[in-house]
Length: 530
Image (tube, rainbow, N blue to C red; front, side, top):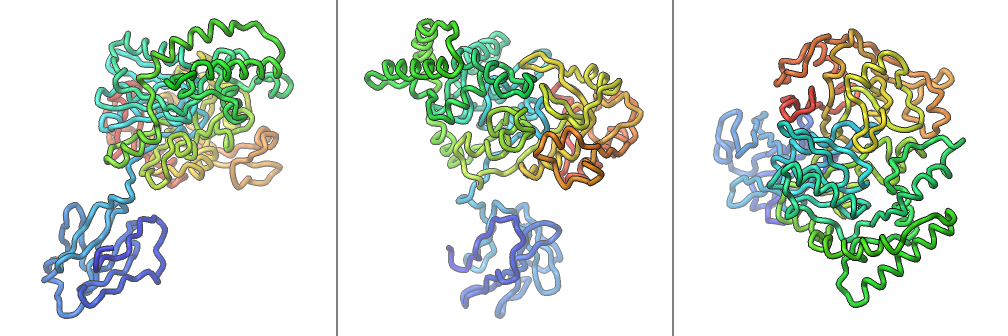
């Protein structure tokens, strides 16, 4: 530590009173860490014979770079951002960027049951981003981005490919169906998006084979109660994660390795995996020789894209690159925290970001929660705020609620703040992006779910037991609608007052500020709240 510098604290937690950095004889200040208006600050007290005007001048308020210093009695209040620290050299106060604890990663996560519109926010943020990374899931995801008159559909590839200056990584937590990957890449190229030189694939990612997709429905039927569909996309995602967990999976590096006899080893792994599927589900017609021949060609095609993703990410962090992580699916589909078993097979929350990319928690700066202005879900499972009535039909029709990946109709209901409070508790959102607010334009009144009651008792949180969830009584508040078209509005300030009140209610309930509001599918339809 530099002589005279206070101990650095980058935590958001309130600093204890005992934490006081007392000045040494050569110093001329002593610092008292405090919180002032929610900002970590230091009280700067003048020592020995030095006067205030010698150090900082005599005015009540002065600027130090982009920092403001405020005089209070005989002290100066110095708000210091977490990414900075204070140092004293040659009797001069200096503020330094903290380079040892880089917070370079912003994260975009779905906060409900998916289909919130994460892709568009990623696209907007990628205008000023160096690296966009996918951390989990596979081609069961579906993100749509509209640029001008061109609509891009993303499933496995990062949405940051739309930005010609952005590098894109498919991380180790993603499961990859190689034929679908190249099909998606070719479809983007047909629309004029040439991005092969900006796409990178983790060597540690697991491979999805066609037989995984064949056994997907068999697995679903086995797990389902009363043969009721869980709602799988049939893309083989679940079976692939199962083989990954059982340590029998095949990774990208197994396919592209240039080591001697690596292809023979790949075939052994592949045939062993096929045999285990036959033992598990019985014999089913499948051309293993054809798939192996296909993958022998793919190993040459795929190899130029493959990187060590851990090294890739940490080099980007060390070089102060701006990194955006694009989550797939959403928190309520998380394997641990979602409505199990009606969930996907990966960690869709903030934990999946860390394990899917191999980055430490201290690198995370902002977590953006994407929230649809109402609630939708695909597949089976309890849905407390679902509206099986005219309101639900209106939401479905006006919102064009059909899955990008499956084409299935989405179930629709009112915004559920119980779900969002639970989601925020796990992911810790710093800001919200409310999407598809314009879908509510025609409603005279809008209901919002604020609590669940079970057997007459208010539940403290979102229940883990689906038998309980299916029987809850939903407590709603009714808010006034705005009954006007907002899809042409380009500034937040011009939104109807009732629309602003709707957004303010969400902010107040969750304690998280709204930063973006979507009022249409295009880029220019995303309003920024200052």
